[in-house]
Image (cartoon, rainbow, N blue to C red; front, side):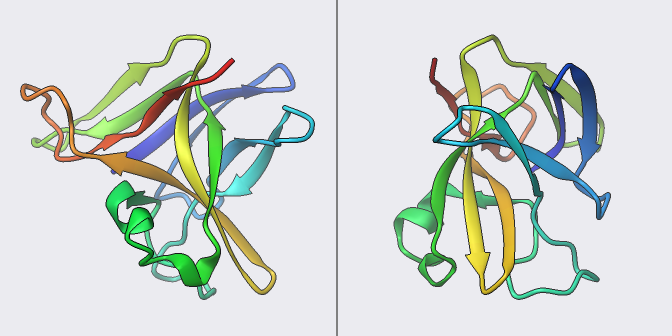
Length: 138
């Protein structure tokens, strides 16, 4: 699971870690192209009806398992993301301009949250069980 994100919004650098209940993701607004800060997933002690966790496997979205939350595909602005390796160490990976984390925006009544979409790593030697889905977009 993606455990950390590093992004810049309005000239300010921010680094958030998923365990922090105030963690947000910078989601690109489709109309303006500017980032909007959306709560990142939900933790066990947080109130709400949306799923626990900060990420979701792409297969679950495609299979319709989260349809009751009206998932919408979003682009998450990030300069880098952090993943824990098999030994528990947090490793950071940089993104290049034009690359985005692919995410899902979910809602239920008045609650809204963003989740990072994950896939099985394409590179067999990566020390991670999952990898965030990275997309290119101008």
